Image (cartoon, rainbow over all chains, first blue to last red; front, side, top):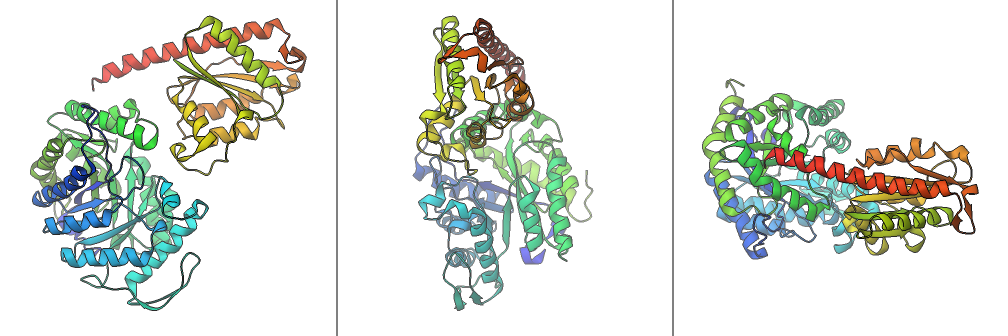
Amino acid sequence: MENYRIDSSKGIEFGIYTLGDHLANPHTGERISAQERVQQLVRLAQLADQAGLDFFSVGESHQPYFASQAHAVILAAIAQATEKIKIGSSSTIISTSDPVRVYENFATLDLLSGGRAEIVAGRASRVGLFELLGYDLHDYEALFEEKFDLLLQINQEEVVNWSGEFRKPLRNAQVLPRPVNGSLPIWRAVGGTPASAIKAGYAGVPMITAMLGGPASVFKRTIDAYREALTARGFDPTQIPVATTGFFYAAETTQEALRDYYPHINEGMKKTNGQGFPKQLFAQAQDHRSIINVGSPQQIIEKILYQHEQFGHQRYLAQLDFGGVPFEKMERNIELIGTEILPAIKKYTKQGGTDA
Amino acid sequence: MKVVGIAGSIVGSKTKTAMSLLWEEMLKAYPDTDHELLDLADYELQFSDGRNYLEYTGDTAYVTQKLMEADILFIGTPIFQASIPGTLKNVFDLLPTQAFRDKVAGIVVTAGSAKHYLVAEQQLKPILSYMKAHIVASYVFAEEKDFLNGKVINDDVHLRLQRLAEDAFDLAEAQAGVREKKEAEYDF
């Protein structure tokens, strides 16, 4: 785990991830400016840092209702504004970028932040960026696999010799600057199904997986498939971390949390995905087996510990800012995480701790 | 209620004839309905390439968005090679997996002979169920002998189409009522 800067003996890591969506608050119908939104992300990361959270990440999406297209630039601002928290992408669409430029950006981010930068590489769930950035959608899978491989090679080798289909060959190329400790943690972003989890496993790279709704046991299949694939290729699953992500919202009572957050999710998904989120599925957040971590702090603690028991994952990332959540609610969430949720889950998941 | 119909083939006339008659009968019974009947022959749709439906352009964007906005869908299909036509299957492939959640779907089938009666039962209904539609249990099946010169000449088909429209509206209303009651119970 040291390669990935994770010390499991201290318990599960807790972080926040944002897609950088730029949506109206459905309770008021008002949308802040893109300027306010990107500045808000920096302030949110600062609060997360002060509250002792482990990780903060920003994703790129190239479509209407998003403001974080240049996510590496936002991360640079976050690097300056924070001190201890690890930072990364969630995710970087490597398919439509040059891995050399991505690596230069994130290695620089690592220098600026004092060794806190990580890359999460993904394939994109929406595909408008292929046209925008000049790529052919027919190459969706091939682009990702080739460029992700190159990114990993750049991370491992100071002098790179490489040739492939989608960019000119590299001959004795030095990709500079190098990160603080010579390499960066690089993760593969995986949707809910086992297919790309298995690919991550075969490659021996850490996996970060998205979980929208449904019981933990279903997502466990993806994680099991990943670890089986790791083992099949001779990698040691105890040395390679798994992270999970999902909707998160804490309030004094579960009912208040559901009431507050549901319209943000539902209206936000209508705009960004073309279909709302079923209320019935959201209501099941009240069942401890549902992976939607929305509720009272105590309920969320129990759920995260249950998920940890199921998955044995090393990091959990909460999405608490989707769909125009007002900043004071984000602040309140960070406060509840820092004062109640984080201490409890660390206590029970650290080495020698008593798991609930 | 928004009602959208689709005549699922770009060739032939029976499906279009039956759907036009359904529309006539439906509008007699529900004159104030927000409605649109899409004949696939009038549109150039691309094949599904897996992208989110919001990211298609032109006719493909138009047809998929109309279907996604509907409360009630009427699917009209002929039978080609013992199944639904590829043009219609493509429309389903263009949409999200749960595209028909909270929507009611009624089916009109036209065919050369009665030998194809169960095709909709065994091949179309499973697709609509998978996509989460509330399906009107009975569908209207009309065959070659029910048509002449672009008209439906079997009175029974007229009456069955009337009943299909009525059943679809009743089911949509009932489902909306159940949903409203259920959502109120959640209290969030």
